[in-house]
Figure 1 (cartoon, rainbow, N blue to C red):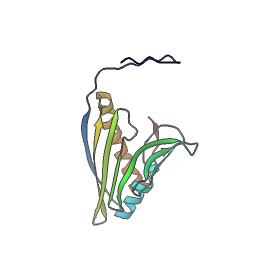
Figure 2: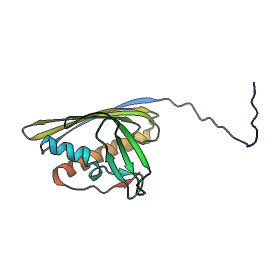
Figure 3: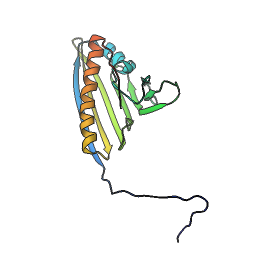
Figure 4: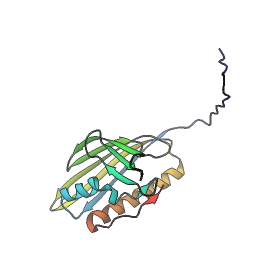
Amino acid sequence: MDIQPTGADYLVSYGEELRPAILDVAWELKLNVPIEVAWRKVILEVNNWWSHCYKDGSVVLMEAFPGGRFWERFADGVNGAIYASVVYCEPPYVLKCMGNWAMPGIGQSSGVWRFSEQDGVTHLKSTGQMLGVLDVNLMKERRGGTQSLISSLARWVEQDEIVERARQ
């Protein structure tokens, strides 16, 4: 049965078939600070080291409780972009998030940050998976972005160096 539009004209276009893929991401970092300091600076002060944003004047926030948002609040104080939702939080040891990290082509992504301490040194392990249409350019950007974030995180935690944010 054909349905004929009434009123407004419209155009529907379908592109080529896309195939989703899954990408595992994992990294580890040793931070020369106690675990409580690492948790505060990595999770609660994420705005000081998160190096990507959509708009100038944005603030990046981590609401570290189940149901909280990991998000970018635009300068107007209302609008923004949600990177992920917090699904598990056990300070100062574990934070788990799920979302699309506001990345084009990503349908769903999960990430876990695990903190442990030995002799005053915090070990931070991050693991995650991304599901979506992962093109070659996105993967190159993702790898470079992850390296940049790890470097910014370490400089903030150990040296109090606030990162200059780059727009996406």
